Structure formats: C-alpha cells, structure tokens
Length: 380
Ligand SMILES: [Zn+2]
Image 1: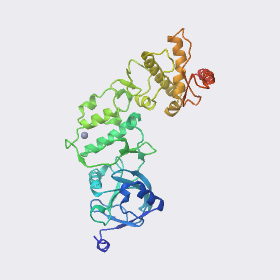
Image 2: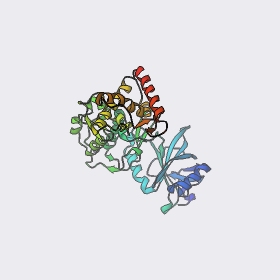
Image 3: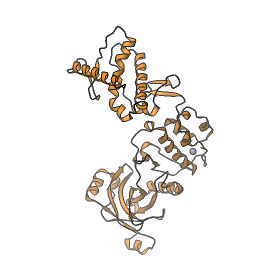
Image 4: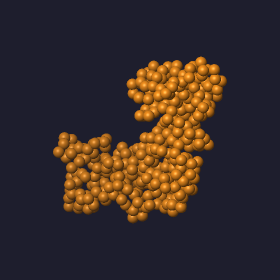
C-alpha cells in the first residue's frame, strides 16, 4: 500500500517514530529484530486488529528494554491526553504479535491491573516479510530478576492470583517464567508476553484464592487447593513453593527437615536466598555435623532477623561470619578434647576465605576471635 493510499484513508493515523542516534546505532548492532528498516522518522499506522488509544503523534524512543531472538522492546514516551506517558514498544513480526494482541483483547478487563494496558498495535506500510509490527504497551516495572523461590509468600500469592484471573477468562500463558513477570517498586506485579492459548477445559476450575492463604498456617495444607481443579495452576503453585507440606529444604535440597521437628527456622524463601554455605572448616567434622551445623546456621539467621531485626541483605553479607561464629561453641560441645583449629577462616569483610597455610591466617584468626567476643557482648 502506498503512502498516498494510506493517507487517503481517514481511519489510518500516522505515528512517526523518533529514535535518538545512539539508540539507533545500538539497535542496529545488537538486536536482530531491529535490523528491520527502522529509522528516525519512520512511520507506523494504526492496525485494525486493535483500537489505538493514542492520538496521531511522534513517538520518541529512548532506550532498549529487552532484546530477544523474536522481538525487541523499546522504552518510549508519547503524549496521552495531554500528558507524557511512558510506554514499551514491542517490535516483532506480525505472526508474533498477532496472538499477543488477541490475548490482550480477550483479557481486556485485566489490562492495567493484572497485565499491562495495551494502547494499540501499529504497522508499517511495507509488504511481505518487511512489515514491522509494534505493540504499544504500558511501561510497567521491570522483569523479575529473582527465581520465584526467593520471593515471600505475599508476592507469590499476587502472581498466582494473576494467573488465576487469566485462566478464568479462558487464556493460558504459553511461557510462564520469571522474565515474563513484571514488578514495580511498590511490589506490584503484572504478567507479560502473553500468547493466546485456550484453556484446556475451556473454563478453569480453580477457585482457591492465594491471597487469602498467605498466612504461614496455610503453608503445609493444600486441601482447599486440592479441591480446586486446574492441574496447571496446582503444579505452578507447587513448583513456585507456595506449599511446603511441612518440610524445609536446606542448601538447595541437600537436607530436608520437618518444620515441626526443627523449630526456630526461617521461612523457606529466606533459606533459598542465603545459599552456598561453607561449613567444612574443621577436619573433625562428619556428614552429621554438617547437617547439624546447617540447621544451627539457619536457626541463628532466624534469631538475627526476628529478634535483632536484621535484613536478608545484612545476613547475606555476613553469612560467612555468622557461620564461622557457630564452630567454636559447637566444637566445645561435641569435640570436647579437640582444640578449635579451623583450616579456613573468613576474611574480615566476610567475603572470602583464607587457608591455614596462607599468609595472614593467624592475624585473621585473632581478629575473628575478638569480633566474635564483641558480637557475644552485643548479644548477637
Ligand atoms: Zn486453569
């Protein structure tokens, strides 16, 4: 279709795309999809598949949010009702964007709450393979950069209730993963990268509301959930760790302990956040000692967080020092006649370890003893 033909059609509006030279260069070099002939002043037009909520205008592209094999998402700013609006522009082939628009249309009532708001779909006037398609979406938060198992229960509940809402409208997510979950600075979540996949059973039978079951007393019981019917949500919630059935997994499954048998432990997501413990610093230890020390470590973590108000970040920073502080009393209790001579000591910033044959070991050992003494006096 020629430009003249497009302009002669009253329903077609033109959106010139303005790209800064820097972004233009970056797009061309880094992102295969952007190698499409996108250039400053490039014009896109409303596409009949979705109503465009924006006035015809120039859209400024200011950065790259995501670059993948099949699509590139740019940050942009446009004018919406007289005010600047931050948007995400997803450029992809039409085959890629079409099912996504269908999903957005079907999930219209969830837009701006559970999924980002869709402001429209634009197309270039090229033909065949060169056609550029662009979804204009609300720019919301950032993709989740933590595994689901690192998130508190409240956050998992919010995400899972979003999945429930999507299923309730007969849509399933084709590729549910952390990268397709957006989170903003207020801890609000939205699901993105949707593809229209019909729900297997047409109508999802899931009735369990996750946010009503955030209290830890619901962690190990799943009876109500089990009476809900959707295999997909059930297995998603299980794999995300919403239910633990009374067990805690330590050191990524190296040990499992029953919560009712081992009191004073932190929640599973805190344990997941603090990994890579180094406990093999005394040659006398056996496998049982490692397990006992692992449990002692997490009980200490729970004490520091619950009683002394320490944050996960503080604990992660000090984990080597916290772990180290357990050995001397442990040796005293279980290896009465053996003097405490660790083969490894943490550096004073707690970030590294020094072997007993390395320079500086004796000084560190001395320093650590003094620091542990200070911690004892502070009641830590
Ligand atoms: Zn379902």
